[in-house]
Image (cartoon, rainbow, N blue to C red; front, side, top):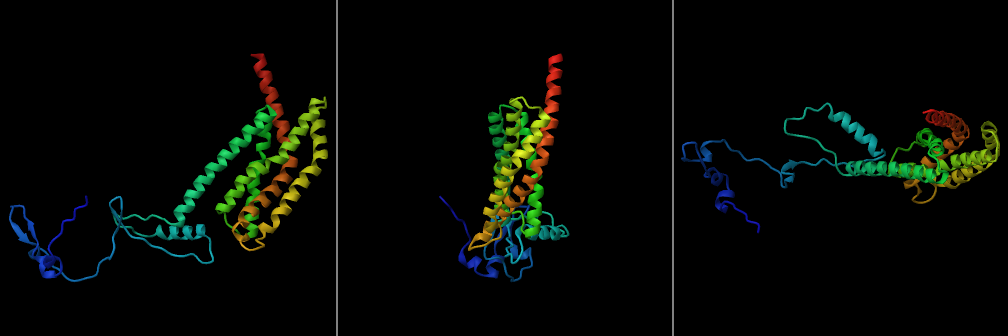
Length: 275
């Protein structure tokens, strides 16, 4: 049950009445507060906001013609020069807090996506080395992502991060095609070097066809064509840039990493056999 205790109206409705409020001194006597203070009339807040018993003040604004991340960076740079009195602190809320929470959730989703992609490939290849060869292409897709965002003038937003998560499953397809065909040729008795060269010659056409068809399908969305397409354009831009760069790098990186890790695994096996 809520209980409110307050003074009578004749005290709270006038300045003279407030001066008659008594306080107890150290000696136990009651002294009118009007004898202890100098009072004057002024203005005060109509509403007081508190969180965790701390009084709060909100500063709100709208953004026009700029992205949220760059605006927040400018505000943080300006706040660094402020001398904040003791007992005060500044916190960002609203869309900034929502953006930070979304980025944390999407970062976790990206980590889980990479983990699941690796585990699925490890189960299919029945090897821990072959999936590792393919996963080496994923970090290089970020180069294509950065180039695509810079060229298009877009920022790394929530839709763009969703595109990055999509790339975790799309960009590995070309590497799977190459590694699987190399293993197939080697199982038929072909040497490793010959199998790698034959795979590069034979599989370059399907790799390019898959990449080009995907890029062409996402190009209208990346250009922001159509009503409402501009909201999803960052996602398509990320996928187009990352997949294009990944396809180019995969044709060179996969054979090299396959050879290096195969040599390393052979040396490790030979070392264990000598124990």
